[in-house]
Image 1 (cartoon, rainbow, N blue to C red):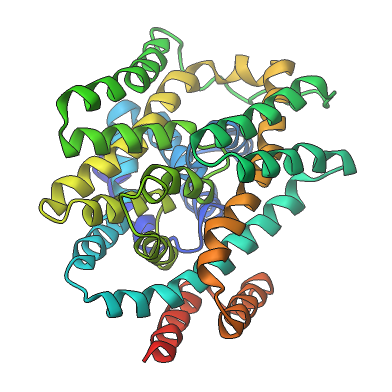
Image 2: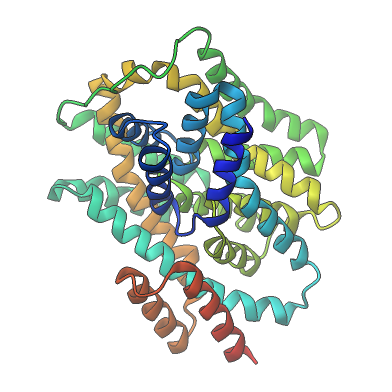
Length: 385
């Protein structure tokens, strides 16, 4: 277990660039360098993780750790990959309460530019990879309209439902089965029962307990359970839970999202920043609860589905449905990019120019994400003086 933890800790300290880049790091580490997986087995796991709700790169790490060392191996992999960014962002979130309002506004301006550029480039790459025919635009556009017209969780679920319906009605090519069965089935379905049970019971517990940490666990667990499309798409769900509900200022939220681009590891560790910022009186406990809650659904799904992965990938209906959901996710991300990202980041000509410049620099790969975030934070602070 120590070897698995140290291997993933190294990735958690160095894997910058977001979910797509993380998969490249994993392929180098576990296929080329250590030969823990064959290229075909790795590709099968990547495909599976991309059709499950939750952060694809974190689920991939969990799956690799699980195949290498069972449940302890999965936990060691997750802890090593997640801990560095969670500690950094949790510390930043705790420090938010100590900043004067003008200091936070100065930092937030540049970080909002960076967030707008990063999400825009992510949207561009997703569209290039998934729009294979003109009709693929239809569910994405419909999902964007629904998500924009119906704020909050209802709009997100409606957009996902449109994609699922579209996928069931569209003919797709024969799905490719997994190379090897991941593990024996046994009682793996109990993990899925636990996932559904927590999704149903945590809101009840939060309503009865009236405890801030239980409320945090409920909201972050729900966000982690309902995200399709990876780390960037968690943005609208977290915004609906905290900003739209009036529990967190939009500037603080976008500052955290911008900071999440600057650290290695999974984007879902923005939960550590938000937890600490939401509960300044107990930032360590709040950051830990928020982080554990948002990742827990991914753990339960990986443990529950991986043993049956071969059977699932052979299902034509499942493949078509999830392909439709993935198309709708692009529309969902487009709606989130417009509001709250662009509406908060672009408030004048300088803002528009900064976002456009950042977008071009990232799209042409002339500047790493970390360097862009640092430069924009400094530039935004300078303009705010």
